[in-house]
Length: 115
Image (spheres, rainbow, N blue to C red):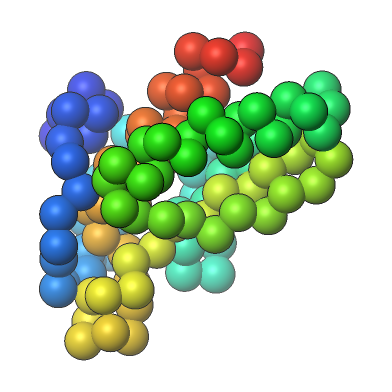
């Protein structure tokens, strides 16, 4: 799989979490993201609060369209985005391909509009 493949995919209902090898393979495609406390996580830095909120609004459409919502930690000039999939492992949660699809799309928005 490539980054382009991730960007072209759509989230779908899944029941099984990725294996550690699967996570490592996909994590290698999305630069700057890391596994932190069981979530695919990345911090995005901005000039000020207005730009931080603009980023959140920019990613809201994609997040809604994919129906895959991250945890967001918002401060004055930073937004930490954390993806995981609650529905996998019989509702116990874990990481699925959906997390990487959305992470790639969030990165694309950041690169296009905020760099």
